[in-house]
Image 1 (cartoon, rainbow, N blue to C red):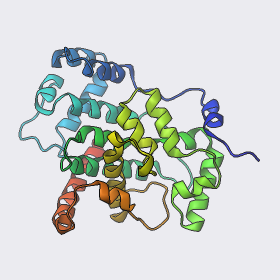
Image 2 (cartoon, one colour; image 1 turned 135 degrees about the horizontal axis):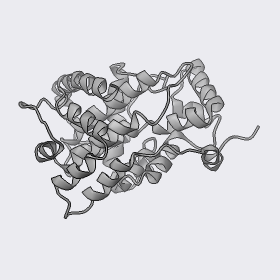
Image 3 (cartoon, helix red, strand yellow; image 1 turned 180 degrees about the horizontal axis):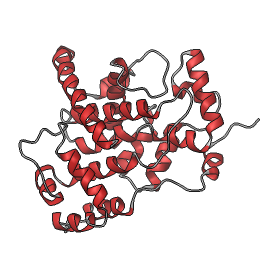
Image 4 (cartoon, rainbow, N blue to C red; image 1 turned 180 degrees about the vertical axis):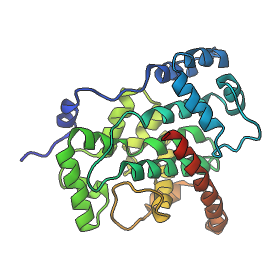
Length: 285
């Protein structure tokens, strides 16, 4: 039996999950320096359900704002364009895929994704020149290729999970035995179709191979590696990996983390993950 490659899998995708038109319009507007908060608010009027969910997120414990925010314009004024974009993407992707079956829990998958995104946002604030909202989106979407595999090649996907579980492998190690592509390549492909930022696409594609990642995106891929590692150590959700969690040395070397700071940093990360619970509850409501 031939091993499915990227083209083979893409050819099976009849109805590609797409971001809502409102989100793609917002992404376009935010690339225009002439855009205003009013422009974004006007677009949001076309999708009141999405606007309501974003406002729930803004008012959740995740942001811990002292006063309630009642409008998208007000949210933009407080949080900024990039944060609103990341929230719009977050509020949308949860509705694009159905539920999983077998030994892969979508509930656990999304918990791991939100946890990784939250820790990525926290770590990005410590890195010079890194956008925390971009890091958040990368963390949230880093496993999307797995959902594509589950939805469009369910037989191969279940074999990957079974192989990983039986042999105590990572998802990536198990899929090497069964596919001529990877979930990271599929995530990159999906990010390209959704017209996400190049930095997001590259971090998704090279998340398992930092040495090949373009320099402009390498720190984001390193943050992703570290964040996913922390969530696995703390058993915050699950992502289809059954091996012992480990952090690639090149990911550590890429980040500005002093080992002496680790205990205090982990305490702060614990608080961030507690806040992530509120984000997860809102996003799944």
